[in-house]
Image 1 (cartoon, rainbow, N blue to C red):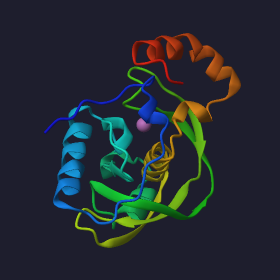
Image 2: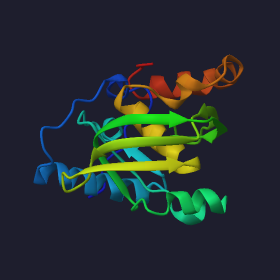
Image 3: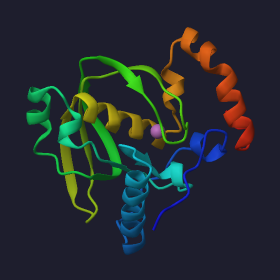
Length: 182
Ligand code: NI
């Protein structure tokens, strides 16, 4: 089932998620609906807040062919896509990468964000089993972007002052149309 995607301006995007006690059938269905919604919107990640939920949950799907660097692609190969992560915790991160990033809650916009190059994340999978993933490159970027959402942090928070200023008009307009929360 496709879920409506919340846009910048809705206060839920600034709320912190809460851990789930267990992965119930209802939460499993939510994860499946989020995957369907993410694919339909042609995104590579979606966090619970973006569909109006507050559970600690995100989904990510970075197909291997999206990763141009073959070494990075091989490194990420053991990670099953789509990745479903309940109660994610970052165990380690290292390195640095800077690239253009967008978000389904900011349609038609993008900006440059610096993030760690590699991340190690522990979480529960869609069956409620513990999993640890170690990802690099674009997949690491997607995981870190979605992890931020669960703490009420948005990619625009990471932009340089200059870039923020360039986007200020568009951001203000988008926020105003969706409830006004910044
Ligand atoms: Ni996003």
